[in-house]
Image (cartoon, rainbow, N blue to C red; front, side, top):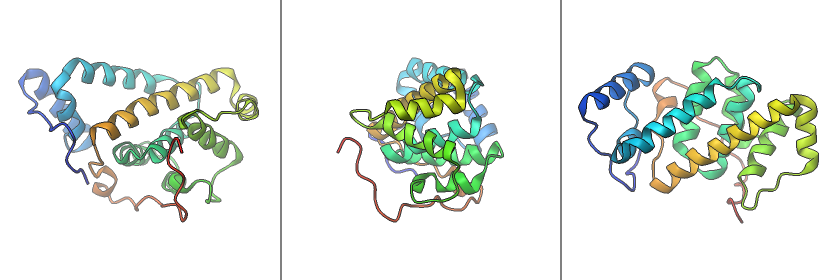
Amino acid sequence: MSGTARIPAAEITGFKGWLIKRFARRTLGTVPTSIGVYWHHQQVLMDMASVGTKVKKWDRCDEQLKSFAHMAVASRVGCTWCLDFNYFEAHNRDLDMDKAREVPRWRESEVFSPLERDVLEYAEAMTETEPSVTDELVESLRSQLGEAGVLELTAVVAFANFTTRSNVALGIESDGFADACGLKPLAQPTTPSAAVGS
């Protein structure tokens, strides 16, 4: 569950705040800690939400692949908020929950197809510092998803890095969405992966 963010959540006030809290409670059951943190700079909050809304409208790459990619980034960066939220969202969108649960240990798991494994590898490779994407990996994805699909997947992974790294830097942790709807805990790797940038 959520710890203490590095910037304490502000009180969400005013008519705009009321609307945001009402929408959050209706769609998520609670008001995420992150909204209170970002409430200190409402333009940043609204612009980030706007970009996220636009990202969700893209449709040239399979939703399940994009969801797994975002979860792989969150797992790699250590963003418990994004990992928990995307697991919860996978449940809400009727994605394959057995696979979603295994994303944190995808290299060890046998549930993923070759394409899914390529997507997860690509998400991690883009997340490394320096990125470690190879020509061969992009060509494999291109042959399976097409150019538009790879471009969309790339933008989704870049957006995932934007949100996960922001949350980790600000100390925004899981709000327990998956726990609240009774999902099994996410699988954990049996061997810890190397830290990003090591």
